[in-house]
Amino acid sequence: QTWMSECGGSSNSGSPEATGSYASGFWYLDNMAMLHKMGHQQFCRQTLAGGNYGLLDQLEPRTVHPDYWSAVLYQKLLEAPEQEP
Image (cartoon, rainbow, N blue to C red):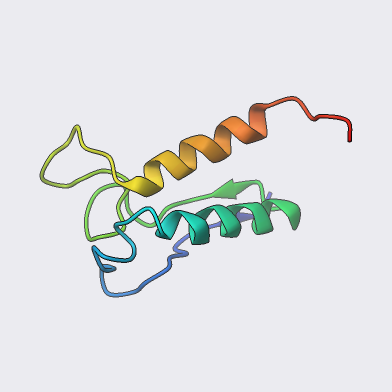
C-alpha cells in the first residue's frame, strides 16, 4: 500500500483566507483524485485540529472546516457505484 501524508496547500499553519476556506477544497479534492488515480490507497491529513488547515476547529470542537466537507464528499464519491457512460 502507498500512503500520502503531510501534503498541504500552504505551509506554516496555513492562512484562514486560503487553507481555511472553501477555495482550498479545489486543491484538496484534485490532490486526492490525482493520487487515487496513481494507485495511492490512503491520504492522511497532517493535522486533525490546529493551524488554519485542520479539519476540525481547535477552539470550537463541534465546528468543522471546509476541507472536512471536501473529504466527506470525496469518500461518498468513491463509495458510489460506477456509472456506465
